[in-house]
Image 1: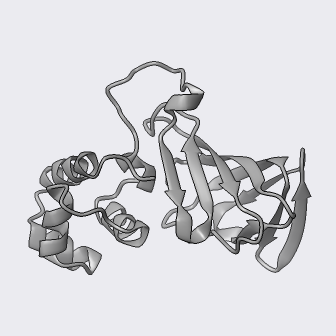
Image 2: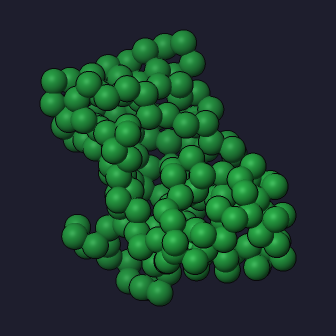
Image 3: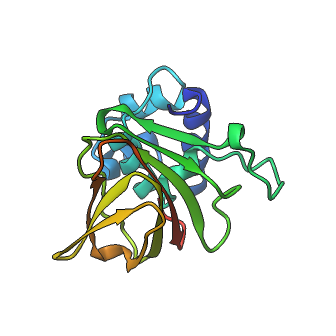
Length: 184
């Protein structure tokens, strides 16, 4: 579930103001309408994941930027207080394990329901990543090579190599992913 829509809107407006972009400028760059972005900034409507991703790319921030609270300077992230993104249409949940995105890497825990398909999205900058499967099994396709990772297995790759990440078991798959630089 996305955090409070007003919180997302405030962050978008501040970042847009930092760039000196008008609503129309951002809308044109993101291929959205100025009216829609205005509604998001005012907390009237929630953006879809796709819309939020477009806005994030235009404002040069990772998607998880909108989920983090930079006012808490503790290095500890409590289990029940992790920023969380649930994508019901893809049956996947992501939770941040790092306190914010101001460092050289980010860590997330992902949960993918059985029978779920590919949840990979292309990233806009080069990255390095490691995935460790905690339970269930993941199908990972790197370029043309397909791997089934079971509990305890890990894989290291450059972000541009990943083409597919899907559940490969009859129960949900849970994994930890560490990415550098933080772009998710």
